[in-house]
Figure 1 (tube, helix red, strand yellow):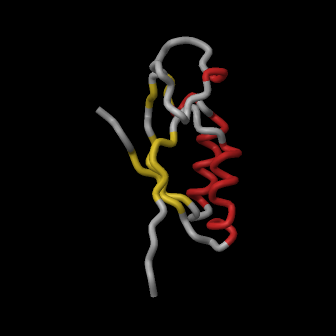
Figure 2 (cartoon, helix red, strand yellow):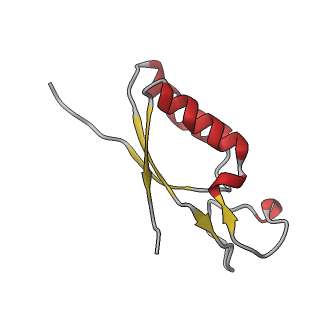
Figure 3 (cartoon, one colour):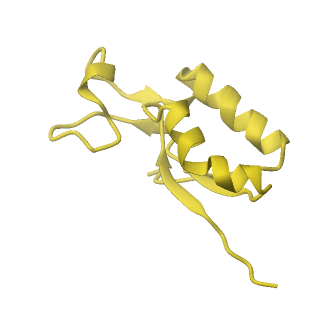
Length: 92
């Protein structure tokens, strides 16, 4: 048996659920879990990182993962289905 771990870094407030679903739908169809490394808070800085769309920034402040209810619900559901593992990333 060969073991493979898929880890997705930088899941954060700005990560759209549709994008996660599209990227990992084949893994989940095969019941293969994905490990998500979640950034608890992110501060948009210029130049913007590729994972932050300028249109999503309402104000210049720190955005906490718990504020994105849709993303949290999605991750919890995948974890309950044993299709996701959640890890802490980039905390200082």
